[in-house]
Image (cartoon, rainbow over all chains, first blue to last red; front, side):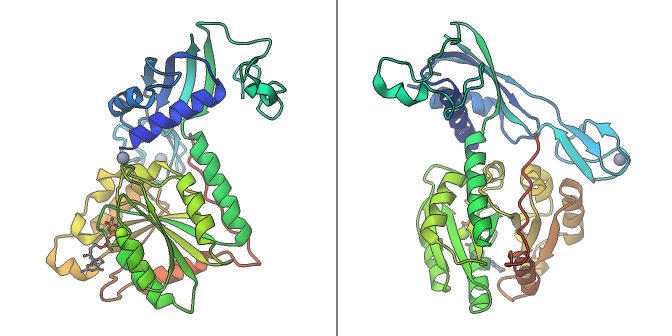
Length: 110
Length: 263
Ligand SMILES: Nc1nc2c(ncn2[C@@H]2O[C@H](COP(=O)(O)OP(=O)(O)OP(=O)(O)O)[C@@H](O)[C@H]2O)c(=O)[nH]1
Ligand SMILES: [Mg+2]
Ligand SMILES: [Zn+2]
Ligand SMILES: [Zn+2]
């Protein structure tokens, strides 16, 4: 389950930026195309934070939708099906503008 | 780096005496108030991405082509590498980093095929990461202008997220796995530079539809090349060998760095 590795990355990222500070909440962005399942991440977060400065912190997850741009017709669109990124013009030559991100947006310190 | 002032460990004078006990490791005048919300805006996998870039630079300096080979369990990764090692002996130096949860069985098979190999056992981990590969590269020490193939843990989900420092991603799918694989695991196929359909010798016995599979790849991963082969009867193998050898950085041409995924 890669969500455990993601949760560990979260703990590493926060503790490196704010060494020694007790953290009470963490906000993250988990893009709809990231391949990370929010519920699985919540479960793993509880495990990965045990005994760290993030122990007991709240995890707030926002899930930005997929956003694409067609390289052929230039249209910016939100694919309804995150699996097949097809432009309404029929082209599959699309760039993913947003939705793949795995970001720590902010934290609250105690 | 401090989120508010932007001071980095290198430029932060307090960092150097963090261990004296008197100071907090990151204490400075504008410390964060209790309850303060601090904006970080950083990638969760930043650490892995940084190590992957180090691996990429290490490989580039030596002109080595590193390929991240991924598929479901049993699609034929090790069999393809065994066959490649034997066929390319004396023509193209090939070494292998083997990732498996347990056992050194695949590494033994690769060694028997005449290749240098380092085994990584991930235990409960379902993917390789850049730190593991960095260690393995230094143990393997592949020669300049050679190919290193990293056989990832058999899994079509997790390995897609972890940059290892490779120059190319190759995703295998065998004809026995069904035509709709690209639609079921779009993240993995979307990240592929090359999609290899394996076990084509079994085509007559299964209902795999190669043209529909190709159409699905065109939809989820229009940039990917596709080849079909059988490591058993040898069909299609020259295409795979050509693909590999055309990507080895030579002394004259700089290697193509892998474009990291946008946010
Ligand atoms: N008929 C046929 N069988 C193959 C071919 N390639 C691999 N196999 C068989 O498929 C099975 C799995 O092959 P492996 O090479 O071990 O697969 P893998 O992807 O390395 O498996 P993991 O490392 O466990 O993920 C073995 O029994 C192979 O003999 C092929 O081209 N044709
Ligand atoms: Mg194998
Ligand atoms: Zn996993
Ligand atoms: Zn379009």
